[in-house]
Image (cartoon, rainbow, N blue to C red; front, side, top):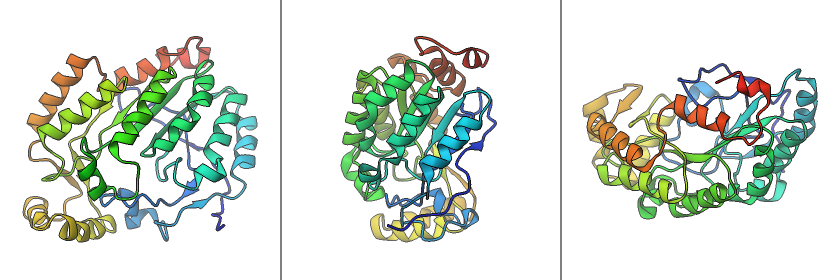
Length: 298
């Protein structure tokens, strides 16, 4: 087993209730990702992630985490999944994420994560136990309503249908969870059929929220990888990107305005939150018994 070196795990984050998913610290227990998603921004050269496709657990991750949790004066919410999926294939055996959740529970912290893996449902019992005392939130990334399209752009990850099934198991356990419908790939997944399909399947699985930005980002490193994948999987689409966006960093769907209205209307009809303020408030209010620290955030 090849391990990555780590001097610390918890990185403070400062985000308002309106700006993004609320949390106090970010943590990555692993380095790299093997999902093979053709659009992944984490391939960008600015992150300096060597051998990105090789997943490496961080050395002494759990002992480091326990030391850092003990040193905190107040509890807060720890989120995972910013640069490496906490439920990559190695997690099934190594159980670092489950071990981290056990420590989070022991020290009274809240937990949140983003994942594309159906393996996350394995820990529904533990996460539900954390949620009895502190805020919990899960975002399952789902970009495609259809499994066949999903497997073309996310070849080595749980199909969308398995992610929706995992979402159902989490919500059945009483966990506050929803869907991160990002990125939306122009000329590929930016259709009304796909957006509405994901929203409706999320609602069927018990989701409390869906978030969508209706576009993607491209910069040096991931742009080249993405364009190679487009030539292989979607011939002719690369030329559309160059004609529409050139070398722009933000690549919004040409259909974004229409899709946004359709998305908002459907979320409202189905009772799904789609604004960060509502999502964060829902997470903080969802707890049966809140700690004063979390009450103060409302």
